[in-house]
Image 1 (cartoon, helix red, strand yellow):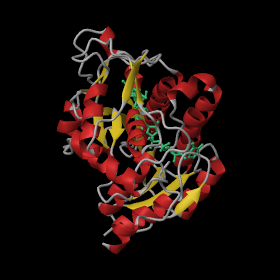
Image 2 (cartoon, protein in one colour):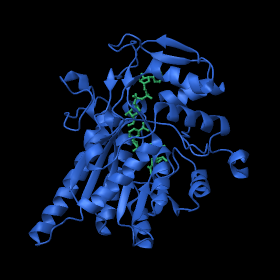
Image 3 (spheres, protein in one colour):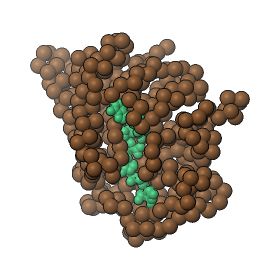
Length: 366
Ligand code: NAD
Ligand code: WQD
């Protein structure tokens, strides 16, 4: 039995693909849209290989409102949207800010306009821990709760906090309009999910993170060192006020993160709360050296690194306080850092060319 129908934008990307899989496994119908700017259509095959269901896929740009209208018209049962499609490179966002605002903010406006035309009220939005900026500027805000004032320190983060405002204003306006007409407006809801540092892959070894171009996140870079595509990891600073001098992050397994989206969507549908923000993280911080140790352990040998200057814009500590999501969404992370490293290594070994190759034979034979 289908429990509901979800449009997943950016659904061939890293987190979107795992969320699409989690939705299909929970008996939601899923329609994926993506322009494949940073992903591959092969992910649709991998989703089908894992769960036996193949979601319809539309190659379209999120800023193309007419194309979105067509998808909603062809799938009139869609009653929810999970919105991942975006540009996400922090450094690049400072170089081409207009492109980041056009895609991330403009694309979200196009999507909301199209949803409005088709009376689709529930949206789950991929926000980011980066909206908090440097939470150590306040006392007692680490681990970071949702009531920590937001204050992004980079262009990418400002596109995310802007979209949070756009969505909030839109939902509030629809609820107000409905009330004036003597209706409840309860069908207009949004979850603003602020995720910390996603990590890991599918334990089968056939689905994982496959960014186009040079990766810039710690774990994909470590994986490249381990597989021999990169000589060593550059550690950005060992003079932070942490136990070993390197910066602290909250690494969350992508399977736990995907489940968080499912629980948030269920909450919107059942509780109809209006707009709510939740942190999705583990609540435990790990340093860069912790990560090198953890990944070296699964690979079976020490991974080479060199300490260099701090990276501009990095902060000491981004660890979540996930209590609100634990309580309200009845969700908490179950997988460990070791699981994330183990799964990432399996994905890397099995798919040295990512999705530019056939699924690993070992999986197909199993
Ligand atoms: P990703 O790049 O793998 O996925 C984003 C997808 O959006 C890609 O498939 C890309 O092709 C697509 N896309 C980009 N521009 C588009 C456009 N104009 N039209 C249609 N599709 C477009 O990234 P991800 O890590 O899966 O991130 C998903 C979402 O989560 C993004 O909104 C990102 O900002 C947010 N987020 C990511 C992280 C992280 O560290 N990965 C952390 C917090 C928030
Ligand atoms: C993690 C730690 C680096 C690379 C970014 C975005 C954030 C969110 C997640 C989207 C930091 C250190 C890294 C390297 C290193 N994305 N590092 N050497 O910066 O915490 O967060 O991705 O919303 O918005 O800012 O993630 O993986 O780049 O870095 O020492 O080669 O690893 O300094 O302490 P970050 P990251």
